[in-house]
Image (cartoon, rainbow, N blue to C red; front, top):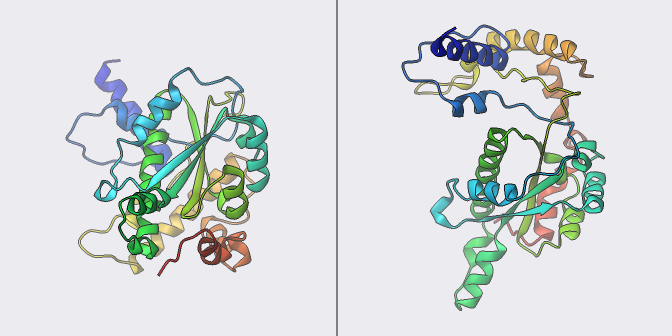
Length: 281
């Protein structure tokens, strides 16, 4: 088999797994290892206790700081958690997720407006703009971009990752555990470690491109048929992976947004953010 043939097979296999069905399109550029890393992403929820090599954390943070940031304000920070007892406490706050304790490294990504507030104070200047929703949104986006750079970098090094949105279930308790000052909010966590090969994770199919890719103008009505096909793909995936999911993707997603209770305590998020110093005007 030639190198070109091997690349073509890798491309076809990854695209098939990403969409759960054959995916054929014309690609007039050269495939590369970055694309392989991106399309190979899967959430890892079983880790070895093997520690990360020296310097891995610092390299990952350099990747994070290479992400785009609005107006170069760099409105994010991250707390690296390696202490087993602290990981256990954070796991308890995030629905007891075992992989938080297993992974050698948990990164907690922060929307951080405290740094700018302090800089303005030191300059003797006002900082009233920090009280507006735009600044919180900017900080959350900055943190997300930085974290995704880290996830890609970690996976390129043979490590596994999984995001932990459940840290938003009890934000005030997480803030206390991490010693966060006002105007700093833990947006999510990211576990990083060596995947346990005894418990392999599969690439989860995503919605068809016809659902998420709109050309020139958005169309909602045209998505119905493709979502019906995706429901069948996901039901097969749930069965194949022995996942305890009731119904198809549409039912699962509808259950997740059915009520304030379905948001898992996050329905209080505005008042919690107010308590943490974000006015959100």
